[in-house]
Length: 279
Image 1 (spheres, helix red, strand yellow):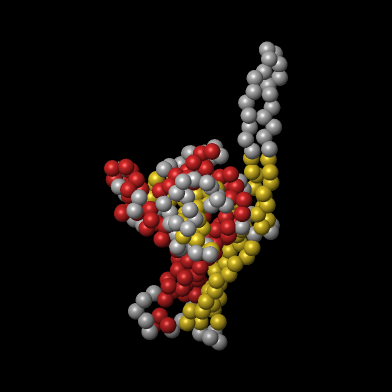
Image 2 (cartoon, rainbow, N blue to C red):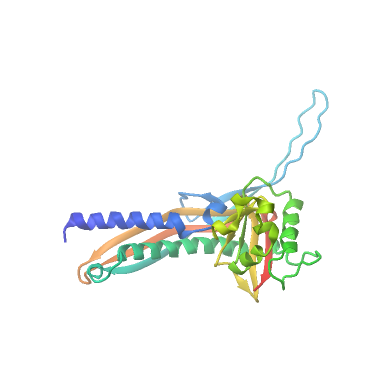
């Protein structure tokens, strides 16, 4: 095999994996606070508390806010997704096997990125608001209008910023429930430009970008859905998706190894509301 041909194949494959990961690999990475190029096995995010204003006397000292800073450590872990690609397979099939394998590796790592973020949300019991005593709020029900408004109130009571960086992730069953809420689906309430029928990937409602996701935890018949602010969740990356392609002459095949080093955690539980929905 020509060395130049091998190098060309490797570069092309690496580019396709990277593009696939960026395109559809992860749905949640852009919805959280992210730090790239971390060096070491962990990194620290700062959870910043609220400041308060005060008065000062004439010629007196300006009052100090004494904002509380709490360090949140995020550990990074290494993940791999590899597979073989027989050189002669592409002569026997009518599709681009290289692209199929590239997409499979990128999607696997993308799902792992989302899994890290979802696991971080699930592991923080303090953000469980399913016991909120509101009329019509029952975890044994689906995603009702009352449940949405209850969560909306909870975010407001915690002074969570309404700055366009709020996100809500729900299961596909809950996405169907939302379609039954006229304020979510009817153009008379939200305008034609925000109708959900154009795409099932996301839509904006109540100052929040709503996204359906198939990877949310199903626990005791209840889907764990979340409404959160971007700065409430941390995602750290020591290495974004990298690809190593090596030729094995004894197998007449390439071995493709996709890898990354990432971690996630919760920074501020006040900025997250859980919505348990029966399924």
